[in-house]
Image (cartoon, rainbow, N blue to C red; front, side, top):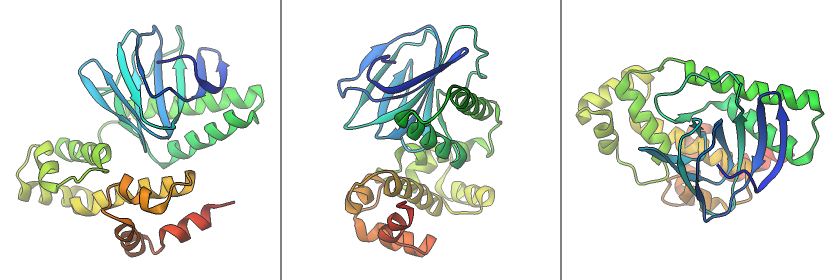
Length: 253
């Protein structure tokens, strides 16, 4: 991963934590240390060996030492980057370099971005922050799958391609099941239909953009997979008893 272009950086024993932005032209890199990239704003398309995906929303990537990777960013973007230097105890190598993370790591990533940008942490606080992020990431890698394989594959596809016009039939194919069997299994395991889960994933992403950016609501709606602003408004009101405008106003300090 590009070492330059970072806005702010700190280093602990064996780890380096930084807030970075990259030129849109992207690049190809290999480095001898392990690295984790977490999105703050924008998106990065990256290929590591035969695996490719997008680092955006709540989807990060693990880059092993010596792994050649090709990446491309589009528009303004920022990422929290954790370099695990030689001698650092590595996380359990994941089956896929891409991983989804939960609300707690999302909040920690945002906090790290704010503090690294402002320079508000002392040395002890910086060491603690890097250790917290590294610990959470290790637990994600070590955690066994929560759902059966077909449901895990379906959820991964929904998270990765939620902004597209993604049909449930396509999700069922990714899960390796017929539509009826997939719908039955998914609802039994998660308590929601595939359509309901996809809507929730889109709303999570919409709320994150409403909170962290000044993008127009209409643009946010399109970015997360809704056909227009009114569709986002209806879904947010029905499922979370608020509207995009009210949610944004409530998150402004």
